[in-house]
Every structure is written in structure tokens, then in C-alpha cells.
Length: 87
Image (cartoon, rainbow, N blue to C red):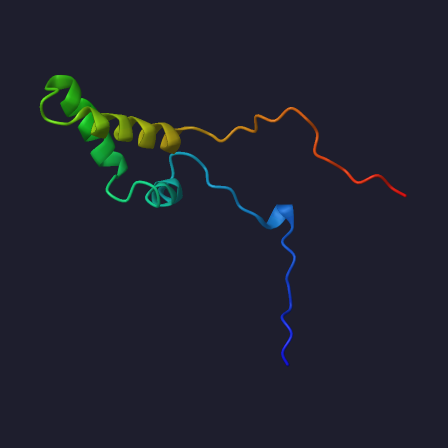
């Protein structure tokens, strides 16, 4: 019989992904496997010049990819977290 040892992760050990970094681009490729920052910018530029080049769905994907790539994550919950009452 073997036992697994668990390691506890401290909040200070977790490194966030900063916007506009190569790490963020790689992270977003999990949801957008066919998109890169350069391709997204190209799609937006070419679609503005000639809408027949790219379908509207690709424009929306490119805009969403760039918005996620360039934006800093912000916590939106204003309520404090739940805490157990001491008994």
C-alpha cells in the first residue's frame, strides 16, 4: 500500500500571467488554437479594409483574442469570502 503525499500551494507561490506577454499568448492558444496576436491584428486590419476577406465570426474571434491578451484580470466580487465561525 502506497500513500500519496500532498503539497500545499501557498497563494504567494502562484504566479499570475501578465497581459501582453508571450505567456499570455500561449495561455490563450488553449481556447484559440488557430489564433496568434499577429494573425488577430491582421484579421482586424484586413476586415476593416475589405469585409469580404474575412467572415464576421473571425473578426469577433480576433477581437476577443486581443481583448483577452491586452487586458489585466480584475476581481469583480465585492463581497468578502466566507469564513467559518470559530466554535
